[in-house]
Length: 126
Image 1 (cartoon, one colour):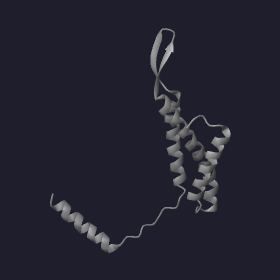
Image 2: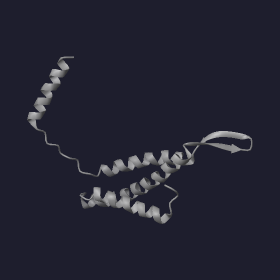
Image 3: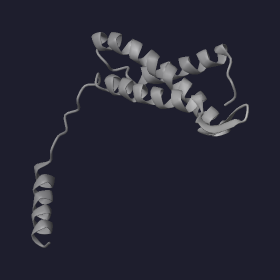
Image 4: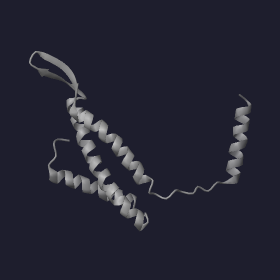
């Protein structure tokens, strides 16, 4: 992914916003309002991370820096930005998914009993 124009970035961000809005469409109205900004931040970070990833793939995570006679291997600034942003990205995504209702899983007693019996047998034979 080459350097993208602001217009192209905005298009990709909007596409991601639309995708995330579809994922979170069943939220209650009060949670949708809270999710709106998180979705916008996650969409921005998604596109930005893709751009940073491309830069890192192209230039590498480090490069040889020269200052006069001095040469040293330094971290690609895109790598540093990526590392910082990916932590915030995962944290923001977690907050967003915490808005989803917790699913209630129905337990089939027959299957549970069979699993427990198998588990006792398995652990007893060790």
